[in-house]
Length: 191
Image (cartoon, rainbow, N blue to C red; front, side):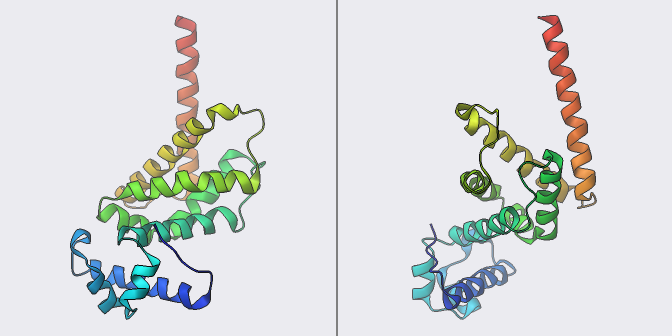
């Protein structure tokens, strides 16, 4: 867990720590990085690192949460706009800020972005409201499905060479949804 006070000095220290982690990763594997390494690379006191983060992974959780906050609450289209417009906005943000995604892929820690997505889903619902005509008891499945889709899509985009635009990604999603709907209709016909 991370504990970042809401003041400019603390926020600047945390950014230095994150940048120090990036520098450390150029020299060492993630699992071999120590707080001493972070302190040397970032120039931030060990006590500040320990006060801000319970462990080194928490630096990545903080960065992902920061990105989610930016992507979900800065110039986000209304939840009442089309699903594909929301998806386009989401993918556009992450494609423009893919450095953290690439880092998580490099160290095989996509569980972090998944956990942050699940955590921030409640903040999204609080900010924009729950979807109308959607049973609340299905909420966890709704979030899990969308989280799995988005994380998997971003992973495929990175591994595929980052060629597609957000518009192309949403077109691919629409194509797949049509196929799923057709499959569901075919299943109902055979029942």
